[in-house]
Length: 374
Image (cartoon, rainbow, N blue to C red; front, top):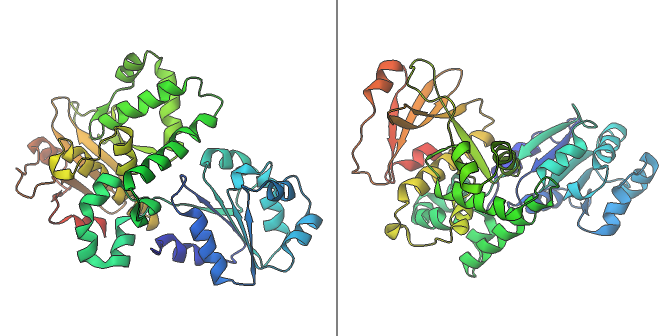
């Protein structure tokens, strides 16, 4: 089993008087992580699986007295798939407020549903963490640099979901099953999704436009829907941790873009599953887009697990001068250009250097990517 970075990070905040919330898409390993915590506190923990109807009944609209009977003398209270429990926010509030010295850890796949339930009751009472698919650094810590590097093209094609990368079965079949189980099942549970076919077509368009600028106007015309519906659907996909945006950086030049955005997938395997393209990397004509998506999503995981305060952008002008990725912290600004081929032409627009001379730009390719992801 590949050890997750979040395990040790979360343990640092055990028994500090706060509940802990772990959100993430389905199949990213939340249940496994909770089971790891259970194993660390064998005999002192209790695990509630909220997929079971009787567990949902016990935890829904309950009282402190009933909860005391339920958890007995356990120090660690683990609640999995908590979004399935009605009024779970109030239940967690009762546990945190009335049972000092205990630790409550809650996980949920439908992050939007869970936040709707807990936001008001648990203000100031929880630490929240996001669990992504497996990260490059987690593979590196588990397998070492040589074996991790050997698997790079496999990661690019099939992504980083735990089941995909640990299965002995057909990876394509596993990946398609994961995609169908959360892309379409979970997302379509929301009442404001009136036309599932439109959402499927939107995901397909976004998958084909990875690495390119996305125009809501063009998407709305292609889908024959209004701009507001496009925005609402994309916002939902972001909150479900399927996609994430990069916005343009602008400070000096009139010619800099300020409204367009790029959209990436948290997992390249899911992206490839949507377009049904699992060709070996050497035969693909979208190498650059997949490589860029992989590096930016992996960097996003790394920064999140570090609890970094950095902000991420891309830079582009109206005449199509571009820097792929910009990272800004309170201390520095760095730019990055992504090229799969180490021998590809490397040039940074002079307009960028003239406007942002304080920002160095590095080129990341398949020969030096490890330093960018460690």
